[in-house]
Amino acid sequence: MESNAKNVVIREFVLAAVTKSGGVLEYTPAEMRADREIVLAAVTENGWALKCASPELRADREIVLAAVTKNGGALEYASTEMQADREIVLVAVTENGWALEYASAELQADREIVLAAVTENGWTLEFASTEMQADREIVLAATKSGLKLTA
Image (cartoon, one colour):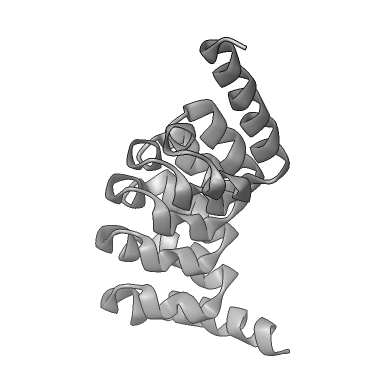
């Protein structure tokens, strides 16, 4: 089998594998972790696969958005630029409030983002800015959310 044809077969096999289980990306060669189509398929199936993506793809807006939509905590592995992207962070904290920990300092002080995070999980108030931690509505939302967790 010609080398190029062999590479195509391997690529198609990896693409099929990550479509079924995104975590498989961790066990693929570096060039596959830099393949946009493969990484997008992986993070769409399992947001945590972003951890294994190449640095360039951790800064790709579409890939990061797909990852945090599946699992907000994947924001931890996004580039600094993506951690400061308001839309991406809002999606992440709505899915998993803990993602607030990985948001930029500016977004940890954004009222809408913090409210979404503490509504999803009251304990995430710890990652909000000092100003947001003193905001009555934010604290009430966090308390209500926390009560839901212990009830």
